[in-house]
Structures are given as C-alpha cells and as structure tokens.
Image 1 (cartoon, helix red, strand yellow):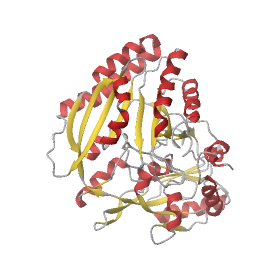
Image 2 (cartoon, helix red, strand yellow):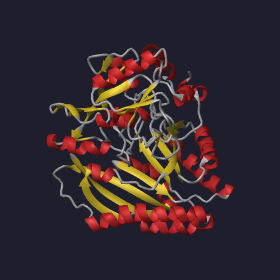
Image 3 (cartoon, helix red, strand yellow):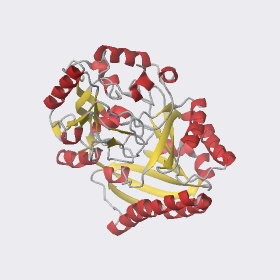
Length: 437
C-alpha cells in the first residue's frame, strides 16, 4: 500500500520504497501510456497489487502502477466456464463476480487479499494433491510489453508463451487482464481438528491421496497438529455453515485477536511460547461445517507476520519436516507460529515451484516484529538439501546462479525476458537477484 508522503510498503512490512511517481491506471490503455512515458523518461516501472508478497518482487523505485482501480470482469465464456478479469481484481472479489454465472475458481490459497495478477505472478497456491497453483488456472492473458504494445497470449495467439506468462514474476510486462479456467460452483465439507502429530505423519500419504484438499499445521514445542480436510461437493449439496457467532469467535476472536495478544506476549517473554502453543492447539480448529468453496478455502488474517515457504518433491517431505523439528529443538528457539504443510500437483508453468513434480510445501513464519533471519536461513538450508524451490513471493536468499539449477526451463524464461524486455524496463533489485541483470 502507498502511505502519505509517497512511501509504499508491503503487508508484512518487510519491504518499502519511495517511488519517483505513483499512478493509478483504470484501463489497459492507461497502463500502456504509463509504460511508454516511463520508458521515454528512462525510469523503471512496476505494477503492484495488494502488496502481499514478503519479498521485494513488487518494489518500484521508479514508476509504481497501483492496479487498485483496474478491476472487474472483462468477459465471460459461459460455455467453456472461462472468465477474463482485469489484472488488479482482488481474489476476494472474484466469487461475487462469478456467482451470476454459477462458476468458481477451482482452488484458492488460505488468504484471498491478493490481486489476481499478483497471485499468479508469484506462484500463489492452495493445497490438494491433484490441484495446481492458481497460475495453472490461467488460459489467457494480455500484457503491455516494454515496447508499449499489448501482447495477447492464449490458445490461438502466442500459445507457446502461456507457461511463461502465466507465472512471469512481473518480469515480462505489465499484466492488464487474465483469463481463468473456472469450474461449476461447488461447496466444501470441512473438517478441522487437532490430532497427534506422529499419527498424522504415519498416515500422511494415505490422507493426502484420499482427500481433495488436505493440509496440517504443527505447533512447535508440542506433539500436536491441526489438520484441515476439505471434500468437494456439488453446489446443490446441503450447506451447514458455521453460525455467525461461532465463526466470529474462531476466526476473529481466537484466530486474530487472541493470536495477536499471544504474539505480543511471546515477544516480550519468549519462555511463555511453549505454553501458549499448547493452548493454541486446543483452541484453534475442532470444527466441522459445509459452505461455499471460497468461504472454506480462505481465512481472514490480521496478525502481521513474515513467511518463508519452500516446495520440495513430495517424497522428501517426511525427512525435511523431521529435520525442521529437530532443528528447532537443537537451537533452543522459541517459535510461536505454526509450521504449515500443503500439497500440489505437478504442472507445466516454467517458473512454478511445482514444475514437473508432485510437490509438498513447508512454510515457516515469524511475527513481524521478530527478526526471522536465523530461523529462516537454517530452515532454508534443510529445504535446499531436499530439492527445495522457494516461493517467489516469500522470503528466501537464493539468486539466479542457485535458481538456474532448480528450474529446467530457467534459461528459456530468461531468454524470453531478453526478447520482451531487453532494456530491463520492468526490473528491480529483486528480479536482478533472482533472474540476473
């Protein structure tokens, strides 16, 4: 978000910049004009959405294009269940836009504050062994290139570029619209409950395979996990949503209010963290309900944190997770945020963390007022030993030389970048680091 005085900062307060100029384009043509003007003035230009990346991927030291006004539906193909959305549309706005057509996005992450373009460009994903990240839902896109021209990429125009453009890190141009492959609206039957961690790990392969969407959170300094199992049902299935008061207690009072208090106490008195975590695992979850898919997938988050997440081959999950558990014990750290584990299908997006392999994700978090570096860097070492690829929008230390080895199509992507943006109009320090100058 851009604050008074012209300083932009991301949601996690891990990145900030004072751009030379901020613009709020409302149309694709306004974006095109902004790109042409920035190029003529020799200023780099970047688009930002909701600022939910923890890395500097959206940092714009030159011209910042805030896409908050570039929202809404461009077109709907009801026959093929496809919708074209303007790039700044927030994920939480999409369900209402799709409702008149009886459609829904196939999968979502657990936060829906991001813009559509930001979510796909950074590799945002949910969970489910047979579902890819949000970028796999992209069947078309339009972007403004460094030459100031629109480039359409879909099944009829430049289809060979789709695997790159659908997850482009903002390095290939400014997205102005995105076409998503949707599905008929559906509901989810959700079961969320605390369980014995070793029991969860012992049957993990089976539970992941048998569930549409499965994930779990482990609370450090405990032997407990909170599991989330979501089963897809037709839109006509009976709904049993959480009563408003119960939902407010679970999500707002406990999930945000008490968690904020717990984080503040934990920072002041780290020795309290094990007891707080034991209490948290008893208070969170342990509920069952059925509701529209988007109401189950996403949860409101108001407690600020910083996050690192790595994708590893799914067969490496258990040794990597066990190593993280051992690390926390060995270092004597007090970690107040749970460790999150999710799953995704292999896909064909060139820079997807799940490119070419079924993947598991391990995410670690720290309260935003705590220094995450020692914890994150040690966990990162474990992830790299197990074939890890870092989430592009979450904190990591890798550069182009390291990443090149981990992505079979890395050179193809950078060659396309050379073609579409030879003068690096869309570059910033983060992209220079992860893609090379």
